[in-house]
Amino acid sequence: MNGVTVEMAAQAVAEAIRAERAAARLSQAEVAERANMSRITYIRYERGERQPTLGQVIQIADALEVPFAEFVHRIEDRIRATRTPDSRNENERPQSLQEIKQQHLQAQAQPMAGAADDRPMMEPDDDWEPR
Image 1 (cartoon, rainbow, N blue to C red):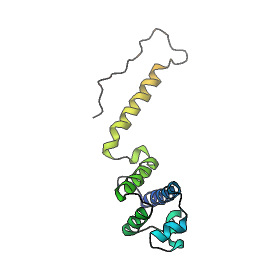
Image 2 (image 1 turned 180 degrees about the vertical axis):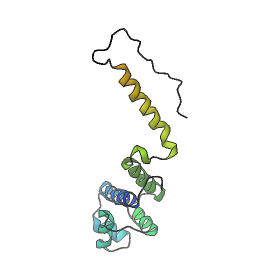
Image 3 (image 1 turned 45 degrees about the vertical axis):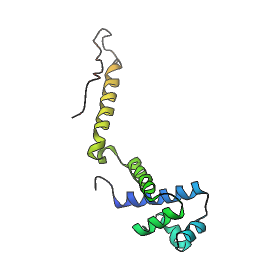
Image 4 (image 1 turned 135 degrees about the horizontal axis):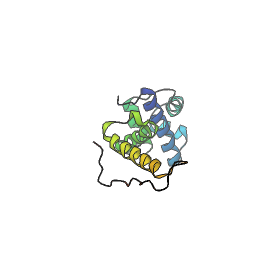
């Protein structure tokens, strides 16, 4: 699953539901009624105690007046925010390598204690591209 666990996805869905409801300034009861589900069921989804089906996520997004595709995008953003660099997919790794390169260059640019001040400093190579 490219480093995404069921727990991570479920937590992201719960957080997105909660955040979108707060942004819409609706009560849990209002969203539940609009989504045609019981208040208790909706609360369990929002708390991450239960996982809604795809159909229920569509109903909740509709109740919150958020287009389904946008709602899914927001869930994906939350998943990305919780993933570790090791669990990022292949498309995200070049950025991580660039970050590593920058950290390495910054570490080399700082003089070491007791090192000669006349040693050459490495310059960043702007043409460097990760493989």
